[in-house]
Length: 238
Image (cartoon, rainbow, N blue to C red):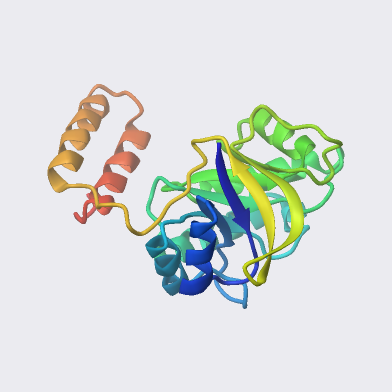
């Protein structure tokens, strides 16, 4: 289990270093194209240089998922474009927030939103942030593969599907207000200090994918993954 936090306030080199010294492993920040709370490429570099990992979460308004499929497609496209612009690597995760107490009557609309956001972010894993009920319902639907649960609206329950858990809000630390989180692994965080994928290694994996493609096994997915490997190793797509 790893110790982390989420916050609206952008981190400086000083605050990032203080949190790293306090034993935090990751910070969850807003992957949005504009606004004071957004994660920028410059902040991502500062966080990475401090030795912290980044969890990306997309949220514009709390009830945005009630826009359903059309909202999910639009937000997914925006999130992917924003991720590329700040250097978030393919294969990491973008979480989409359901930051309200979704009812059972609203849940299918929420699922439709998350599924569409996932379709619009093919180079990234897709996650959902929300209550126990949201995590359980979205997990059962197969709409995404990563889950960040908040204690809010959860009646003390923790989903077995959760990769991240937000367990306390509004804590003062190192001069800013944060929420406390813990990670259970495979959450899809990222940083800018990781070594780029070597061309030779990428091409070996691409050859394996070509074998699957030529055998007629998962051709669309094999093609997508091969191009993701090309991008990660600095090669042109095909």
